Length: 158
Image (cartoon, rainbow, N blue to C red; front, side, top):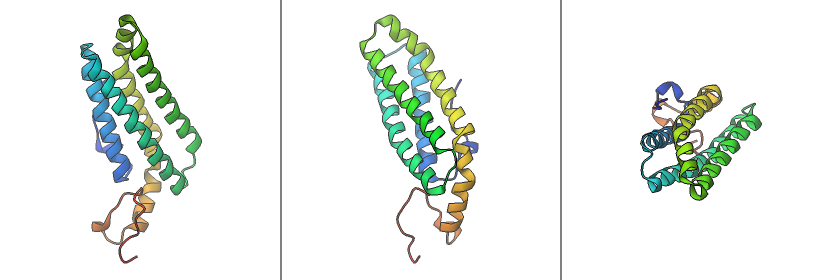
């Protein structure tokens, strides 16, 4: 499954949407790297980058969910924890495993991450859209003042 950003994935928070774009780009890169069972160092680097990006993104996203009163925070948080554990396990298996284990991991990794990402956004994150839109409407003094709901700086003149 090829993965690419589509505007229908946007939840309306500039920071979260930028994270999602970056995560999809890294997953797409992993798909390319793993399709040919290529450079192990590049693969480990991409997985590590994705894991680090996800870690920071999940903190920001869960903070946003708390602020907007998102009703399904715990289930969402569990999904985040499961992905981080999976990425950690992949990194550990890749570092410690045999070539056969590495090949097995690589054959499924890119596509399974792409499937997870699309499912997570379209079945979970997208449900935040109306909450984020409500916050953006409240914060926006004019169309030119659109901000990320994760931006805590006070509005000028507010």
